[in-house]
Image (cartoon, rainbow, N blue to C red):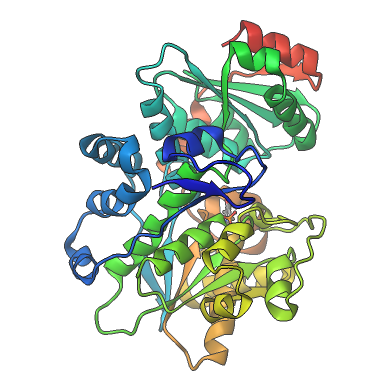
Length: 433
Ligand SMILES: *Cc1c(COP(=O)(O)O)cnc(C)c1O
């Protein structure tokens, strides 16, 4: 399988090159040139298969000739080492919990797979690879954890000083090993600017094999299909296929779900659950795609004014809006609605939601109101503890910290503080790691 650019001005490349390059040279996103179809036999058998076997089967055609079959299997075993449980919250409303990975958000799946792929691709190279990432919080933790201990790869993570949560900062600074956190005296935009400048610095790139770990990377995007196959594996046989609501920001996760549906996975419909950053709900309403500047909300991992993966969704539907509307609906909610949903779900169902999951449940319920209670699922994308401040303020609850977090909080932190100055950063890159 090859990957072409959604801008169609760069040459198609292999999975390996698409992963290492991240973005295509023409600025487009890489997209697979064929979508594999699943035979019914596989779907029937799926219920008896392990997560590793399922992941291997769905990823094999996408990775193709870039890895030997047993290498891919070994990699999948290492990458996906946590459960993805489906639970019934109330009648006809199920939750798919995507947050049981190390950093308690669904991004672990993509980050772990991508990091293992990179480790594999540099194995027989004489040069180390350096992954540069700027983070406003969540992505950095998943990337740091995913790459920890991967041989041949160093990771330099830039985060804005004093602007990430306590847990997030620990996830970046207490890990050590091949993960190098840089505390930048500036904001997230400064961090991003330094990273961009490094990528356009030919002198630096001659010396250092640089790559990014951006969320648009094919090696992060494609494995997220696994969530929806794991959903199907656990879906009760005696209920009609579900509609699935996915809290969405950059639209990578839901786009992976739509990809799985295109391959034949029997999901009835996807529902994009959004906060006030509502470009996509408005587009589906009036056909106009108007990006806006980002609005800050309590479901802040979805605060995206211009969702970068939406071009992939359009590609998947050949830019046919009517066809897309058959498979996708989108709703938006305010923070007040989100908080109310967290409160009443805890009171009525004893289920503690984080703000992102709450938006997911709101959207599922709205869909069900219009469609005679079609059985459905919403994805819980983060553990409520991850957004402790908000959850604690809204809901009076008691829950112990997950072991992984309490262990982490006891560890010592290391990071290097530096001004938001490119020459200082460049010197650092030349000397280190
Ligand atoms: C990243 C993230 C999202 C948004 O996912 P996209 O793939 O960008 O749509 C939703 N919830 C949480 C908790 C996240 O970290």
